[in-house]
Length: 329
Image (cartoon, rainbow, N blue to C red; front, side, top):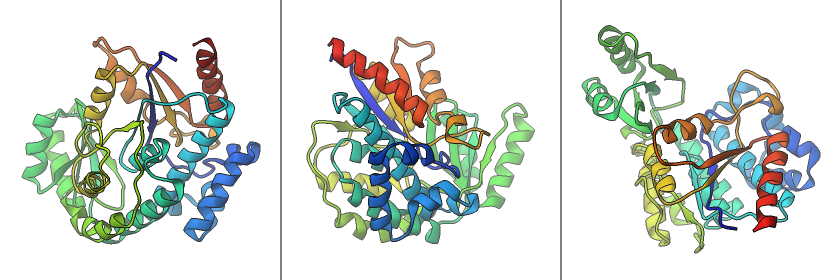
């Protein structure tokens, strides 16, 4: 197959009550993923995923295992539908999604990743403080504005979409100045449990470091994008651990991740898991990362085709499209 594939996984904010229920109902392989996850986590992840309530799903300690499990359920069903004949050259994920990317690449096994994100989520919720705000600004404008109010850049999603984190009162003052100086630039407050990927996560990261030391990482021929560097992970386990440690309190360089992938020759991108939008059922949800992927390619020579694999219908359609390409190769 001449296609160069990137498997992508979204982060927090892509969870919803009902997530994965369609796959669990239709595929024994998905049910097995949820059974394994429940055994590892010590609670019924299927019940939490399908029924919520939403307030519980939004707690970081639950959001992260819920999303990781859904990511891997989608990936497992996709592999089943394509007879495991469609393989990525590169894997990546946004924040929490980086762990799913490591699983997809075979660097981490599913149970190890679950234990990691379970503890990661607990620590981020316990030690975290603050909130986050998405600013329609470029980095050069967002960083000094954030620092003026003791906030910090938490994510570079796109060239003109920078996420910052800080205490609610500090973000209020930052947003007030933006409204006064650039009224057309409207920020979006993200009601997270903390200012993730900023200095407010240092204590959580210090506790998490010992957890990372226990994780086993395997060599893989599939490369994985690093949120911390914006480039590609090395194959050295100690370096991967270090980058996952730093990822907790440094900005997610997502725009750099996408440029790294596209400049490296990726021709097709498949997004696994999660879902956003006002609809209540999996079938009504739309992909989390699609807009970013399409926006970053505008006005460039990049021409990677995008596919979603986030529910039963999109999984079936994407599997059919990719499997047919494999058959012709």
